[in-house]
Every structure is written in C-alpha cells, then in structure tokens.
Length: 119
Image (cartoon, rainbow, N blue to C red; front, side, top):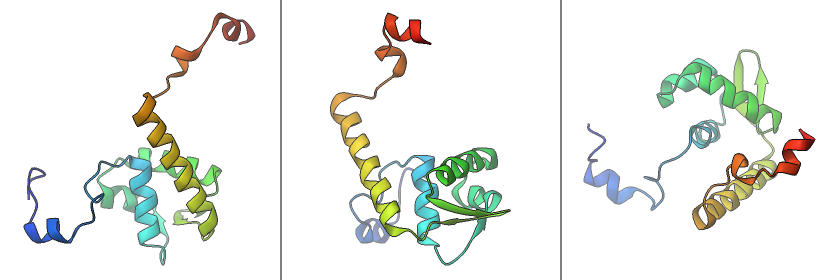
C-alpha cells in the first residue's frame, strides 16, 4: 500500500495523533514500550522500523545514558521505570511545544562573542 492512502477502517480506528510524523527516537521508544515483554537486537528494531542499524544503535546508546532503556549485549529493552519514562515524555512534549511556538533553537544563533572567548 502506498504512503499516500490508507484503508478507511485503519483511518476510522486510529487516534488523532496516530498519523503524526515521529522522530526516529520517538519511534524506537514507542516500539520498545509497545513490546515491553521482550528484549530486542538493534538490527531487528531497525528492520521492523525501516531504519539504519547504525542509527538505531546510536539512538539506543543515547537513551541508555538517560536510563530510558536497558541493555544486556546484544539486547535492548525499555526501562521498567514508568515514572522516568513519563517524565522524559513530558519534557519532550514541552520542548516540542516550545519549538512549535517559538521556533527551534540553534546553538550557533545563540552564541555571542563572549561565549566564543570562553571556548
């Protein structure tokens, strides 16, 4: 099926936000959360989501640093810390809302001469 159209039944049964574009990070977290009864290899996650394995591995590593996923080589799973996941989700939503309202921040736009002197 083309990305230009979906089955009417799928459309009618979907939530309002089901069709919003999601970042690769969001897609990975949602995938792991929806399949929280299993641990996955990065290559399998990449295959299921249609992403590059190297990109998935890099994202999973960043998520691990924030304690949002668990890792026992070669498997990855979503954290069982629901409060941490909810907090990260709220923070992400705040950033998304701010980006929509005020535009995305770009560090190079914010730098001043004083900041360059410190670096």
